Amino acid sequence: MQLFKRGGLILSATLGFGFSNMASALSLDTTYLQANSTLQFSSSAFNATNLLDISFSTMGNAYQSGSVTTKGVTVPTFVLPVTNADVSIGWNLKVSPNSGDATGSGLLLTRGYAQLGLANFSIDYTTDKVFADVMWGGKSTNMAVYSFTEQSDLKIGLSGLSLTMNQTLGNLKLTNQAVDTFASVLGVDDVFKGVMTGLDFGTITIDIKTALRKPISDTPLTAASMVPESSTYLMMALGLAGIATVARRKRRG
Image (tube, rainbow, N blue to C red; front, side, top):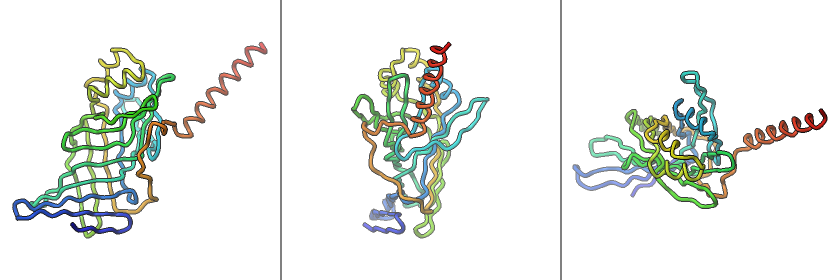
């Protein structure tokens, strides 16, 4: 076991024996690095959630980073900082991704008074699934939320302890368990299942560099973390203030 650490980058290399079986497993702690996964919903998925009055806000490390307009639809872009990444290097020097985590990041889905949180995302290349802790009503359960296909090969550069990784995962589709859970918690009928099942939700782009950033927390979010960002509270406050103003005007009239 060889362990290297430099500026928050940890590379743990476990070497096999024999030329035909030689392999290296690299585990990267990316909490100090420029490492992000960018979730870009498709316009069709965003339209479908809008029709169902489902809104999104961020939790923990996650944040909204602008938006993309496609076919006249403006869709927000969400960034989920990567906290850990694992890859394998085979005897032929081919690099294969194993998994990646965005611990401490979350999205809060709201429909009326119902809320459902998705947090502590993990990409599993063995099953081609995106896992997350799904939270509601003070409880949490880990499940496969999306299936995916690798839209592009993993591009990786390694020079000394400097490593870059870039890849796009596409064709994100909700698993049956996720569809059933979302429908139950958010209180939507079977039409939701018909709309959401098989719908392409967009892409996840993974971009990791060894450039340093301000360290982020890798503490997992819990059900108690289901609180929207401050900007969401501001919007809610402005909405309530507007309702109160209209009510006062009506009383005066």
